[in-house]
Image 1 (spheres, one colour):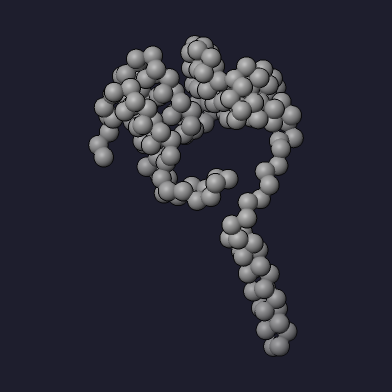
Image 2 (cartoon, rainbow, N blue to C red):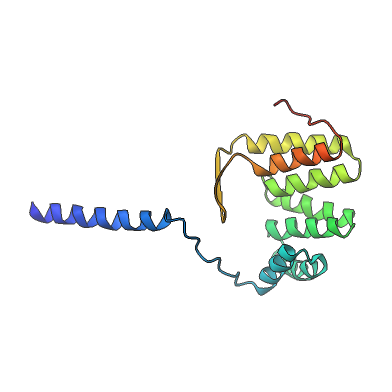
Amino acid sequence: MWRLWLLCGAMITLVATPAQAIMSGAESPRARSSDSDYADGREAFLRKDWHAAIESLLKVVARRPHHDNAHNMLGFAFRKIGDYERAFYHYEKALELNPRHKQALEYLGEGYLELGRIEEAKAIAIRLDEVCRFIVMAFDNNGWKRGCEEREELKRAFAEHGVPWPLPE
């Protein structure tokens, strides 16, 4: 019987220790992707070096055409240099691979707004809202957050373009 108590005590100690480390608030270092083209593309994307991001990320999707995040970043980078045709192609590809890709939906809606394609932007807002209804809490490198940040960003873009938000509050 004493062995059972000893085992239970050891298990409680093992379980409690990692939980304390996870909740410590200290950020774990982000590992660089083992795909150097993706890592280079992501770093260029974060620096807003759109041409370098495109160069690296095109290599990624040539090798890994199923990479929805690479397609999404390509869409954004192409949009930022004014190539909407290629931007929309990559957003649609990201959404074909992952129909619930919140960021691709947000960026696609912003692109439609920038071109004055209001009805298409509204349709994307509705689609993003449907995806976001299922999100209560999310976690990323910045910690826990409530709701769907992408929905709020697209809503802000609607306001910046003077277009009424198509959904009820």
